[in-house]
Amino acid sequence: MSASSIEWTELTWNPVTGCTKISAGCKHCYAEVMAKRLQAMGVEKYKDAFKLAIHEDALMLPYTWKKQKVVFVNSMSDLFHKDVPLDFIKKVFKVMNENPQHTFQILTKRADRLLKLDKELTWSHNIWMGVSVENDKVKDRIEYLRKTHARTKFLSCEPLIGPLQNMDLRGIDWVIVGGESGRKARPMDEDWVLDIMDQCKNANVAFFFKQWGGTNKKKTGRMLNGRTYDEMPEYNIAEL
Image (cartoon, rainbow, N blue to C red; front, side, top):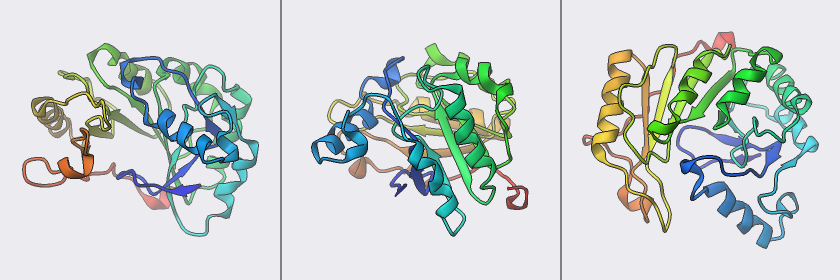
């Protein structure tokens, strides 16, 4: 567990680390860069850098948090990676089910496996399920997500590397948009962002603008139309 600088969450929890690239959004993976840095620092959890690893010992962490938290699950991996056994995914879900005071945010690019396993999992109110949609080529992930039993569904359009016109946002509660950051960041067109914002407004979906990105994301900031957009999906904390 560690405090997160990611604008839309509070903590990160990584019972799985490591991953493999499957689409264009993975090209400059921040998690891979971070894993190699942590390996160089001698952090035991990342001794194999970005090779996929399961950490049973991390499962107990959410039981120790005293205050309500908003938690990004597996910021350093993908819970629905083909090499993560269903039994372990169920263990992660059991932890989330048994800690209803916390909100758990899961993000995957493996939307097909997510849907395949959907009925095997218990979707308590406190689990938010999202898919990454970085360009038009992977819009099918939205349909896979929509068919799941997750109570709160969201899209992460980050890094946004192409337009996403005419998305079907039925059943989607939240859309996050952000540009790629880092030395080799691919540019994001403002028109792409404004179009997604309009789609969200028309579909009554919460819109969160995370960053412009680029080589210096602090300098480019996260202002859009002269303001910040920090909308979150509506949910009743009493349900959690």
